Image (cartoon, rainbow, N blue to C red):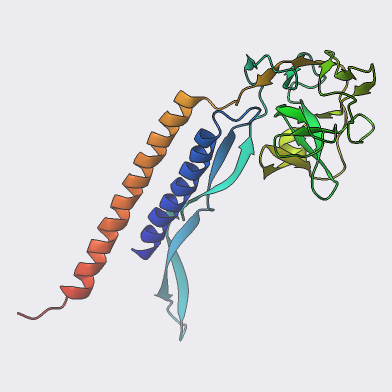
Length: 269
């Protein structure tokens, strides 16, 4: 009885975490460059139940142990991991010169992805698809959180003016004619090489990413929209909630059965 109780409870926990992941996707449906998470549900290893007995053998003064197979028991399910889906999002025109969007045109690997490189508070490189940038009071190109956007030389980008133009291959030219190449980083296997840190940033799980080869386009005056499919996410949330309710009913049934076993079985009169 208690094994089944734990199995149903594990399903509730897994669906709760799955719903939290979907809720986070919904919360970022309007976040530029956000990549939706997909959950991977896995089952715990099955156990093969056997009944242990004994058999008397003529001529022996002891009983030999025997086992009778009963069947397999699944011990529950869990949310193993959440994986970002690095698919290309829709491009939305904003007409703001400091907004930049990355378009993956023909990358060497179909699973690869390109990113803008920014600098975190510790001076380490981080990667993002959110190209909502602006020029701060010191003439540095920064993102919405004030983190410095990095050049191809992994340096902060300083501009002589508040306006600039950007070519399709990622070269920024300010009003004084100074040209600086953006650090457009490339990962051939982003789901394996990158770890989400929040606020649209990823860190490399190992060495820093290298400069992207040909196969991308930088669009000025546009932003990449979130890759969250609103309709699909809502359907998945409803499905996850129904599964949670079903597991909850199983737990309630077990609880009522245990209550009867404790309070009613063996009662006299």
